[in-house]
Image (cartoon, rainbow over all chains, first blue to last red; front, side, top):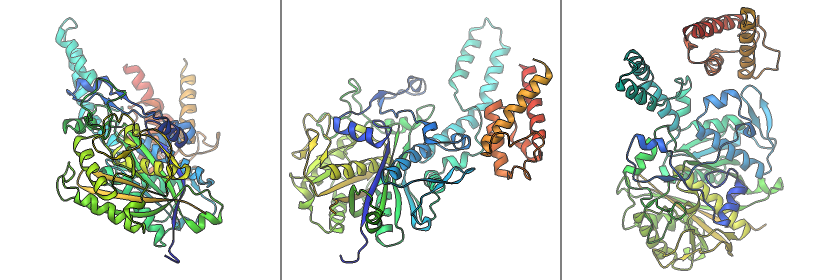
Length: 458
Length: 90
């Protein structure tokens, strides 16, 4: 449409199980390398878990991040991994950071009007790690001291004294109740942290639609730039799913959503395979994209990875934890996203699926893909490599779409031996000619969202 | 360790924490500095400072005590007392 503002991706950043930066992430994706590990052994002291695997995160380099003393103690890990991804996205986009406020450790970006720059972050559970840590201190702090006092008053030879001490040792909690607990646990903490860090005064939005949160955040940023409200946005998703006792993991495990067959960690995570047994929960993840109005990006000579061309979302109104069996709202959503991009479904060359590895999701998603796109579109699941990072997953998959379009190649759908449906799954990493790509996410609650991307040609 | 060495050690650690929390150049924080007038710290900065002092010296540091302090000398004296009390107790 003449005069319509176009939105392009100029930078990407990632911190997730198979990459502590976007280059490592993308090369591991292309090489088919994921990261799978056993959950912390002491979690099994507190519950009989059915699933015992997850995708652990690499260690975050706080010195490399430049985190000061206050940030280390007053930010939830989800905000710090979000910053790690955001800094990468800005650097890849060619934006320099200039220190603006030393005490706040905050920066400005030359050439970017702060009032026309915004933040859009999706998350499923925000700072639940901080909530649970402080809650465990609140609940257990005094009780643990009383147990230890009681054990100390018993005759040392009594076996009950040892048993009490053992019980006390299992009551793990942080050393103190953090005075900044509220600003760490609130879902909008990551978006607020990024807004402060880069001194952006435009819209600062948090989307909390579970596994679709990252996709919706990028979609909303796309709209804000398209309609002229903003010129630049950092958009994506961030999630941190670890707690001291494995309670978050247990929440997914008890609902029978996680991989049930844990005998072989290397092949347990197998989206779209007939032998799939659930999804592999990630310890967390962050994916952030730098979106810019195309004219601005071109004027400053930025390298454009891809263009965002379409976005749509629908709601199942069916079940809190299961996708509607008829897939009608998913179908309506992808058709709307494709129409928003000004194309027809036949023109979509590559589809990055939600592809969790649960029996229900993959079956219904495959049917919808077959119905709307037919057997020609190439399909893969990034979760086969990253595990499922809930609110960050859609953003990591958008990063994959951007690099796939830029480099005209994508990663394989790993661990896929016997496909659940007759679709063109990407069976090996390599070259793939594509002009249009679509990434879709479905979430607990019933939220569906999709983004459409186009190969950028000058 | 003599009392003088103990107090010098505490003072040095407190001043370092203050400089880190308030992002000051090394040597800016002095024993006789006024927390508000010389260092520009507000009530939230004091909460950050005492949170950091808890990390540095352990849980015996009480956040409520931050409210009545106006100079770093007050802070150093308070921390010295708490650390000494904790050491004597245990």
